[in-house]
Image 1 (cartoon, one colour):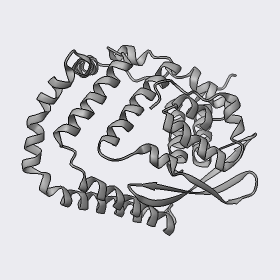
Image 2 (spheres, helix red, strand yellow; image 1 turned 90 degrees about the vertical axis):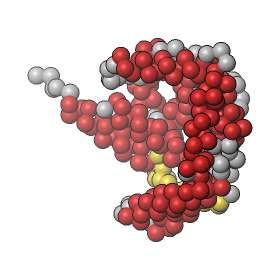
Image 3 (tube, one colour; image 1 turned 60 degrees about the vertical axis):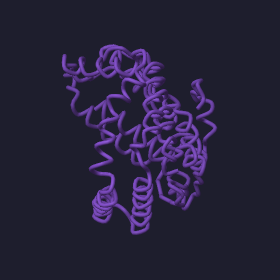
Length: 297
């Protein structure tokens, strides 16, 4: 149940922020969260925190205080067992990324594959993009929970993504070298040598490692011309309807040079607004956890 609750929290964060590179962490304080007391401010703060890679702040922002404290306290509980194979694969990957001269060694390993891909598949990219876009659009059209307007916006986003993929040469050698350098630097900054060490991270340590990885991911996307920060900076929320306890918010944003919108619902709990879907999932998870707990006789 804990894992379901944590996944729900992260889903809420990303939904609100996306519907909607400093080296120093920018963790939000409880006082700053309290200031976000309107639906619009809640979404804008989510976007700002995601831009900073402040996952600790995002979790605090996305969860009611009691749930947030419980998530922190339960962070290392209910973990799946680690196999020796898992340990070996993790160690091999981290060693490759952090070894002296890793950048040159990794590119030398990858370069023949880039050449082979360009020779065999580059001209077929438009076909693959069309197939992938058609599959995604079919899923959207079959979704009974989406309005016609939401479906139109989702399809517009899929088409914009497809156009970017089609025009971007991901195998460009200079771009690949930059991405490898970014990945190697992030791995060194994380300074995690074993999978057991990764599993033993405290909540705060894990959030900081996630920040490093996310900022590196954004930087790698920028190599190929996509600015995650520009998407988040373009977020403009507008309340469509509200009764003081629930609110439907239309969020305009620009991605892949395409203006897009989506709607999300928030609920007021105490003095703060939270993602409605995430709160419903948390309620179900808590109910299931309660049912699974033996009653005292």
